[in-house]
Length: 465
Image (tube, rainbow, N blue to C red):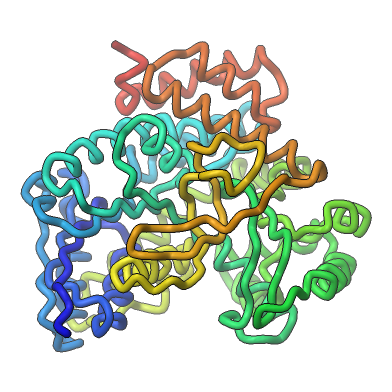
C-alpha cells in the first residue's frame, strides 16, 4: 500500500537544530515519506535560514530522496495543506535570552531560560506568537498537527489548550529522553529496554516508576541513584557540568569526557530520595539546589559567561560550519549546542502519529484525567501512547504528597503566566511571580518585573496597548 506523502512546515527553520530535524526525516523516510519540508523564518533570521536551508538541501541530495526543501519568510505561503507544523523559534533571538538570564542575576536571583523570571518572560514573548500561528493553522491547514518544541514547551502547550480550539497540539522536551538514557547507563542496559512513568510538568517532573522490559525496577534504580548521589557531591557535579557546557579549553573537554561516562543526573540527599521514592528531573536542581545553582550562575554572570552567551558563541561557530558547501551531514559539533534529541524526538513523534504506531513517548499534552489534582484541560508532561488520534496519556492517579505540592505550585505559575501573556495584565504577571519559589519577595517581584518588561518592550505589545 502506497503511503500518502507528507508535507511538513517548520516555523523557525533557520534554527541551528534544523540539521538534526532533517537527519531525522531522512532516516525515517521509509515510514514517513516527507515530500515537502518548508523552512519558515522571519526577516531577522533570513541569513541563517538560507545557510541552514542550503545545508538541508545538500543532506537530502546526499540521501538521494525525493524530498523537496522550500525556504520562505512568508508563513501563509508555506502552511496550505500541511500535515504537520513544527515550531522551534525564539522571540527576540538569543539577545532576549541573555536579558532573561542577566537581569535576574543582577538582582541576585536565578537567571534561567525556562524557570523563574527568565522562564516567565520567555513565555510572555512566545505565547502570543504561538497563538497567531495557530490562527493561521486553523485557516490554511486545520487538520495539521502542531508539534511544539519552542520553550517554555509546557506553557506554550498550556496556552494552545486553554486559548484556542485547536486540539491537535503536542509539546516536546528532550529532558525525559535524557533521563531515560541516564537511568539506562546507571543500570547498564540499552535505553530502548526502559520505560519511565513520569509525572509533572515540562522541566518540573519526577520519574515515579521505571520499567525494564515491562517489569518495575524502581527499588534498584533508587538504590543506584542513592549510591550515585553519595559518590558525587553537588558542588563537584556542578563544576563538571559547568566546565562541560562552556566546553572551553582542556579541562572542559576532560569534564565532557567524564560526564559522558556517568549518568546526567544531579545528586540529592539520601533522606530526600528515600522520602520522595522518585527520581527528580535535572531541572529540579533550580528548586532543590537553589543556593548552589545561584552561586554558579553569579560567577558566570561576573565573567560575562552566562549560558545564553556561551550558546551564542557556539551557534556562531555552528553556522560557520554550515556554510561549508562540502558539508552534507549533520555535524557532530551540533550535539554541544545543548538540547540534543529535541529534533529527533519530534521526528519520532510525527512518524508515530502518521503510522498510528501505538508506542510510548514522553510528551506535553492535555491531562484528560491522567493526573488527579490537575485540571483535566490543562497540560502535563507524561508518558503517552502515540496513535493517529494523538497522544493518550497513561494514567498516574493521585500524586503522593511528597511531590504533589511542588507540581501544583508550578502549574499555578504556568496558568497565570499564560493568562498574563494573553491579557497583558501586569497584576496577574506579578501574582504569577509570587507563585514561583525562585522569586522570594513580592517587592522584588514587582520591581524586577518592570525592569524586565522595559527590556523586552519590543516583544511584549500586549502590555503596552
